Image 1 (tube, rainbow, N blue to C red):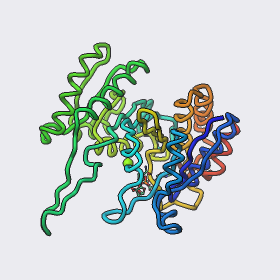
Image 2: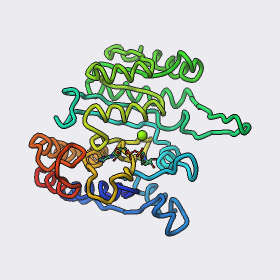
Image 3: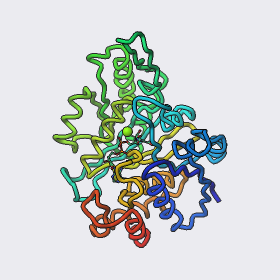
Length: 331
Ligand code: NAI
Ligand code: MG
């Protein structure tokens, strides 16, 4: 028996989180869920954003499946998503972007993986109001954090038999901070002679991805660029409903989709749960259930190949619930 923490989240979070839970439950792996929420919905009732019960659960289970949590824009509390990643030092954010449907398709056979530095950069949230006219945001880059994310990307490439690592930066302008990241990448690349290495400036990278994404394999980059490129890449394969993710530290991991709480479609049964279902598959892989994770990926692929029962973001007439049922039928 393995106990896992489930955070339903806000907006479409509960819809997609319970869909992923249903798929995992259908495999009868003896996974026990501790369901504890955090965020605005909890705050409105209890006055706390993250209950102690959630921290205790994460620290005892050490594996979490998490729905998206809403963050107020331009005011209010800081992102709980970012806080959890930093609190538990989940320094590696892995986001596999793989073509699975012909719907909304712009390219064939995209298969790339984004490694996003997940612990520092502008996401440290150090902002200072200097005057009415001037505000500073501090970009914090350390050798330690840069080395570990770049190594993680190369180790992954080696283990998965991938050919190339592309490091994305803006070191032409941010000579010291991005320059440090780039320099570390160039040095580490020498220790992996079988993997080719290139560095690309982030603005050019956006153009290259939109013109010819098939040239990329493993991408490693800093926190903000990784956030932006993730959504861009999701758009290349059919949308945010399709890309899963993992936040991995030394012994705690949180699995969640790339997308947010999608308030525009929340509560309507329109959310595509694929990204969360595939995040759950990444979680099973992490727990050692590789065979079962593959079963989920195959079931999802079968449903997409049939094109039946897909959700409206992909032009289908399915709902979150009916899509989940079809995936379960194909397990
Ligand atoms: P979003 O990712 O929630 O939505 C962007 C667009 O994609 C919307 O049109 C939405 O309907 C669509 N979309 C997203 N997921 C979908 C799905 N599963 N199926 C179908 N369509 C989907 O980004 P937005 O609107 O910028 O952010 C909303 C909230 O989510 C904000 O409060 C933001 O801070 C939060 N957020 C939380 C994240 C997390 O918990 N890790 C990650 C990203 C955003
Ligand atoms: Mg994002």
